Image 1 (spheres, helix red, strand yellow):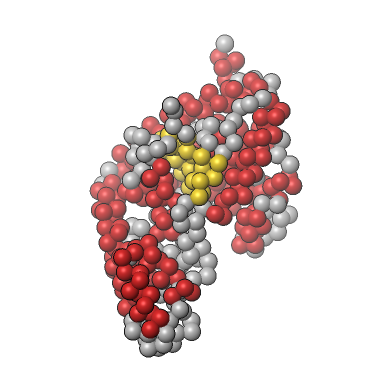
Image 2: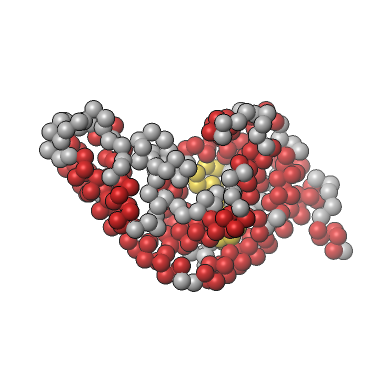
Length: 337
């Protein structure tokens, strides 16, 4: 029996942080044993908000992110690892799906309105690429006939929209694509060190996977804790403390003791942060060592991406030929005859 196929894409913003690792990357690694996995650095998506930087920065961001993937355990022998733009068929499919996707569907996606606010823009001033972001995401998924998509909680509306688009296409042109299912990670949302927002490089409330143990401790010492606890002897409220939330993932064997000491006022916040920093450094030690070894082999990373693009391209060309045929459009296959 053939495995179900997973597609997961990540915007290349450079080195990943522990929020990416807990919220998506560990899940991507684990899925490899049970699924046929396709993983893409979605560089075209980086252009939808015009934050890709210069071409050199965008390419460097892709390289740094893929280094983190490989160091974390993504296996290019069992999974397809590639850069989105290296398989241009996705942009053709995006155009075709745009023809049948109502604008109203896109404008009601919650993440679109959130992004507009973050950009201090309006719905009239943002580019079409941002409005059409979910259509491009749908194209990424269904171009490879993926039926499973590991996502965080905030991306579920995009998967629901992808399912609507698939249903409309299949109704008009016949059964072509499977309806993708969202597979929520065990840690749907990782709050940043500020205790307010999702962990993000943009908000500088993150800890990079590849950073040094010393820098890790320095960052964690800035983390938000219980604002009502002014002295070490004050009883704390670990249920509102983001440091305690992170302890559950990095020092699971100590959480009960930490909870008791916090609520009784026998352990201070600085000590608690020190323990967390030690836990983070211990959990990431092997990953960081593998990454340092990979950094010495830049050609190896490029070879992986080239091989992945070739393997992904074979699937994409077959899918696009099928789609164009069903829509009554000319295909590459017809041009070759």
